[in-house]
Image (cartoon, rainbow, N blue to C red):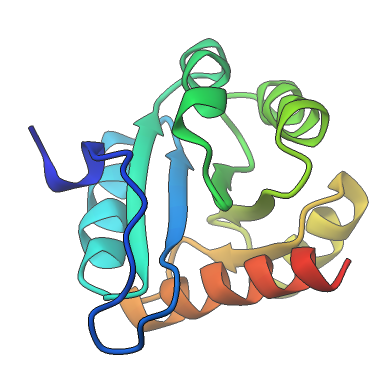
Length: 144
């Protein structure tokens, strides 16, 4: 079983703080796999599931109980991402949604706000930028 498949809550050995649980919904196997590996490298982040389609994500999200959903803007169509976002808001209202896309950052920022996401990051981001965006989305959601 891959490391990201665990759904058990854990705490960071270094900080003693709760670990942010992350679910990745992206139809690109390459990006989803890379993002999961990147995020698992941080002590304060744990990938609790991945999905490559809206039905797969919706079926898995409630049980995974993520703190942050990393959501592809086009899964493979914008309306599929909208279905996932609506499901998260209805069934996991405390979970943050981080919109990811290959779009330029300034365009994605506006689209993320319009969609009701808690943050955004470009797929061109590196591991540190992705991890930071996950943490910021979670903080934004908590600040409400």
